[in-house]
Length: 270
Image (cartoon, rainbow, N blue to C red; front, side, top):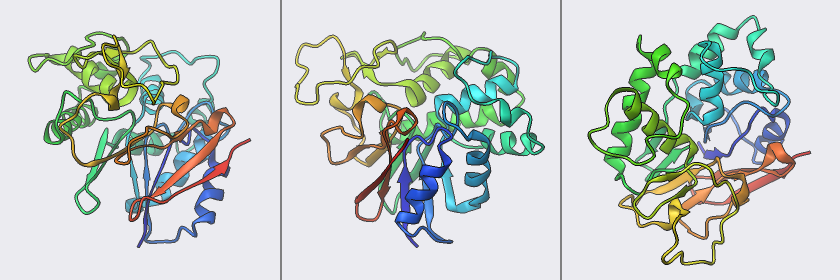
C-alpha cells in the first residue's frame, strides 16, 4: 500500500486521473486530498463521485470551495458567476454526494507518517493537539443540527485573531478561516485575509507587518501538507511544510506527493 497527497483538484478530474495513472495508483493505495475538491474547474460533479468512490482509501479535508458548495446547498450563499457547481445540484445523486462531503473533516493526521493535512495550514498560534481539537469542534457542528446556523454565519473576516474565549459562531468562523483561508498572518498570529500575492520566500520578514503563516515560529513539529495558495506554485522553502497547490485550475500543474518518501509528481493542466 502506498499513500499519496494531492493538492487542490477543483473539478479538474482528467489531470487527477492522469496523475494517478502516472504513479500506478491501485486499489489499497491511499489518496489524501488537501481540500477544494470542487469549483472553478470543468467537472466538479464527477470529481466528487470519484473521490467518494475510493471509500476508505480517500482521506479528504474540506477547503473553502467545498464549504461554499455546502453553504449553497443550505441556501446560505449565492452562486457566483465563476462557480462551476450547478451540475452537482442537478445530479440524481446530489444528496448522497453532499452528505458525504459534509462528513469530511478540516484536518487529517496520521501518526505513522507524522503528517498533518489541512487545506490552508495549521496556524502558528496552535500546537497539533489544539489544531486537532478545534478541527473536531467544527466537524461536530457540521454533523449536528447546528450546521445550517454554521453556514449562515460562516462568511466574514472577523474575528481575525484567535482567542481561547471566543464563543459560538465567532469561534466557528475564526477556526474555519484559519484552516481554509489562511495565507498571510500578522506577527501576533492574526489573519490577513486580503493579501493573496506570491510571497518572497527569500525574505526573513523581520519587522514585517504580515508574513506567510509558515514563516512564523510554530509549535507543530509534524510534517504539514496543505493546498489553497496557488501563488506559491507548490513551494515554501521548508522541507517539512509542503504546499501542494500549483494552480491546476488556472492552467498550472496538479501536484502529488508520495507520503512514504516525500517524492513529488505532477502533470500539466490545460
